[in-house]
Amino acid sequence: MIAAACEMQVDAGLKLLKMPGAARAWRALAREAQAQGQGYDAFLAALLDAELQSRRENRLNQHLRQARFPQVKTLDTFDFTAQPSVSKPRVLGLARGEFVKHGESVVFVGPPGTGKSHLATALGVACIQAGHRVRFTTVTALANDLLAARDDHSLTRVMRRWRAIPLVILDELGFVPLSTDGAQVLFQFISDRYDHGRSVIVTTNLEFSRWTEVFHDAQMTAALLDRLTHRCHIFEHRGESYRFRESLQRQ
Ligand code: ADP
Ligand code: MG
Picture 1 (cartoon, rainbow, N blue to C red):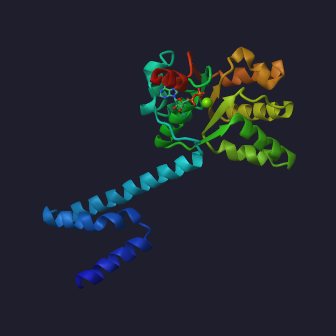
Picture 2 (tube, rainbow, N blue to C red; picture 1 turned 90 degrees about the horizontal axis):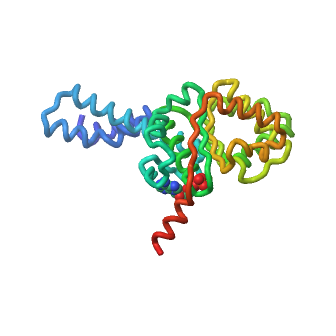
Picture 3 (cartoon, rainbow, N blue to C red; picture 1 turned 135 degrees about the horizontal axis):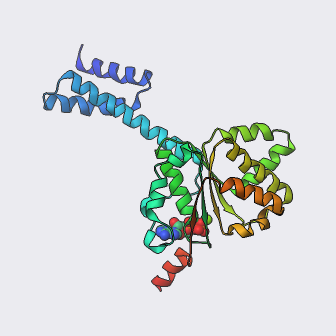
């Protein structure tokens, strides 16, 4: 077969087989193999590796999109020296994603701007890299979704769909007061996750003693905290807003 026809056939075949990573890489790999006198088996191994690598990247990007992080943040951009009350080794330990397998929860509590959402997101990204599916939502958005589902009698189905996601990040508990109904469905949501061994990460500006302000009912709050803190990693952020401090330093 003449070279041009052969190339066309390889391109077409890889396209039909849906192997975009191999399609992108095969020419360079073939040239390299020829230049270095590699055998056919080494070339084939390199080609398969290129395809597998590209699939891993695509899957990772797809899972990152599905997580709907408002901003992608990572652990390597978090300055732990600015937040010494949060233990870096403990956070890095969680970044391996084992806590998701065990259905454990994580709570970041502290004043605004101290990196709670940053760390929650970064842990979420790390858990995606560890192979878990993750979804980020604010508490308010979730409560509204659940209430809408309850109103059109699809709450059971919607809950089941959330249950399929092993890690849900609930951002900003306590920032906006919830209605009594909103609090009720949120309680149901967190209980459901606990009962099915599913993890949550919660960020909040309210220490636990003030959670009745969100859930209104003292008994319900106690029941919720009992479930949430049963297998839980708690991080207390302290101090002033990171951004505020940065802008002070600039001036
Ligand atoms: P919170 O959720 O506690 O209100 P954020 O996580 O949203 O705070 O942090 C506010 C901004 O400051 C974000 O852009 C975040 O990336 C940044 N930030 C906060 N703390 C740190 C830190 N210790 N190191 C690096 N960036 C930080
Ligand atoms: Mg936040």
